[in-house]
Image (cartoon, rainbow, N blue to C red):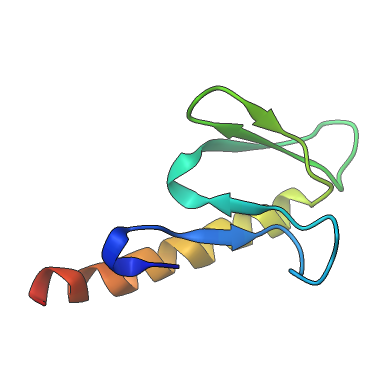
Length: 81
C-alpha cells in the first residue's frame, strides 16, 4: 500500500504461500463466483484479462472490502497534507 500514490494491492493468500497473487485494487473490474468450483473465483481486470485463482469468492470479496476500507480511511489524510 502506497497511499500518497494511490497504489493499493492485496494478496489472494498468505504471502508465504507459492500460490499467492498480489492484485492491484484499481485494476480490478469485477469478481465473479466460479459456478462449478466454489474454491475458485473469476477476477476480471479493466483490460478484459481474466485470472482464475484458487481462492473462494468469499475470501476475494473480503480482501476487496478490506482494501476499500484502507482507501477510504487514508484518502482524507492525503487531501489535508
